[in-house]
Image: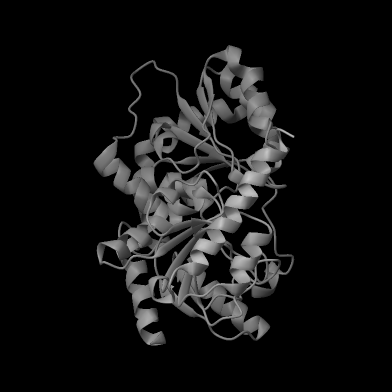
Length: 385
């Protein structure tokens, strides 16, 4: 019974939030921002704040009961499951902005009403391998991180005979938030001579994740080498393996040099790390492009969610760029990780311009994606009439 009561409270809150949103006059919900998890705001907020600075006040909707955005006016909690499905199918608004791929392919369908859908990326990675084939088909406007997204989506439309979407040069809000924090809030951690090397271990989720490829062994190797390790899991890993972080923390707590970062939204662990170790996580690009420091990639099998990815005959950014921003090490050579890490840190300054050039060629509007995204949305809304 004790477990049932919180669940019933969440269900009641979801329906109450849905009803409250539906009661809001249509003129007050011209533009709606939706976040399935609180982590989504890291990608949506720069655009949202740029709109608010111009006196456009979008409505916020979220499915996470602990979402901090609920403290704002015109914010509504609608939960997951039936209330979420009902919201999507019956939603009334001029436009919706989301970072949720696969709209229209499962229980989250386009509204029966006339609504314009904007997509904002939550990863710099290419669109045609790590996302499902129809991930963006239901969107009207896609705000692209860089030229690779435009090329890939246009090729997808040509290969499958899809109607052309509106593609706008945007950038990447998560990167801009990191750059802002580095400049205005907190200087990156500077390790004193002789202090332990600080490693941020940030696995992706799914079959490609280090979770499924010697994560335990890698942790032991890093801690034995005397490194300070911060482990940060992808939100999907936490959802599917909720006890894993606790189990690893308990196993290695005696080492004294390991911690778990539970806050995927924060920038603290990225700013404190001397180096990041990952495989295919988009966080590796966030780290390299914000800190201009190299990444060590463990070469697990690539993440594939579209079995027809090779039909586009285009390269994959997340694969091609790894050699430009760091080193790649096969999983069967993880015993070499401490030496490779030490070498990368010793030559970190030599990587700066190389990584800066890769960033400039990959990401639009570095430092200004919020304003560019707001411009694109307002321009589209104006065209809709």
